Image (cartoon, rainbow, N blue to C red; front, side, top):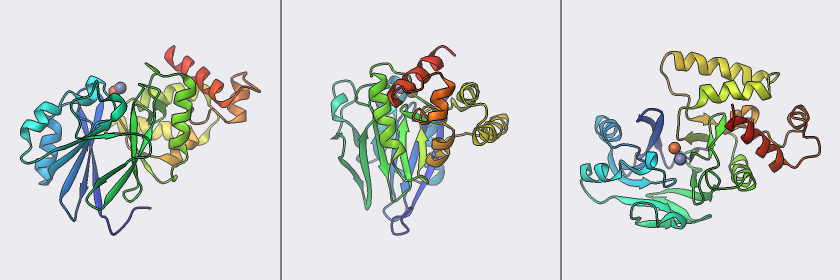
Amino acid sequence: MPDPQCATEIVTIPCLTDNYAFALHLRDTGQTLIVDVPEAAPIIAECARRDWSITDVLLTHHHWDHVDGLPDLRAAVNGPLTVWGAAADSHRLPPLDRALAQGDVVQIGALRGTVLDVSGHTIGHIAVHFPQAGVVFTADSLMALGCGRLFEGTPEQMWDSLSKLAALPKDTLVCSGHEYTQSNARFALTLDPENAALRARAARIDAARAKGMPTVPSPLGLELDTNPFLRAGDPELKARLGLQGASDAECFAEIRRRKDHF
Ligand code: ZN
Ligand code: FE
């Protein structure tokens, strides 16, 4: 539940072609956390417009489209900047001030976030859940109606990572790293055409995209009902894929394989 004692504001910032960065602002201290830096200019402009000073950066994983804007951002920030990222990835991330592992806490003022190792897309990808703000930053692990491609991890690792995220409170807003939702919806409908919640969501996504509006973030409860990668444990979905008796991770692996060839 959002905590009224720790008032925050969150804004989604489109970057590059289809990336998202996020700004999480603490009203009482004025601190602002930026999550991922695909490029600096849109982030600097959005924070300047709101008169928010950037104090912290969280890097979710090492891919260039999540980190390459950091030097330009640092050059534009007056004052100290604390960079948080995965200890396991410190050899291929920009220099970190705070190196994080599963279970560690990201503390910014009174705001506390818990680190989840969500390896799969890469090994060392982290997500951070801020329960007081009701948000989780998932980048290329759990995405709106999708999940990241398995560049480094196994399907078992990604299923384990998604299972951690699926256990968070259902009203948590999932802040993921890309606007891939419309094509994810087309794929999801091929697996789950009878799912009324999915069909309704796909229609809303088409309407939002027609107006150029972002479909990220999305509530976790909606992902649990409609995202096929989170529904890999569903017996009906397994049956539809001809995978009766398969493990949840095996069903997840088959869904991921189909998506790779979609
Ligand atoms: Zn990535
Ligand atoms: Fe990415």
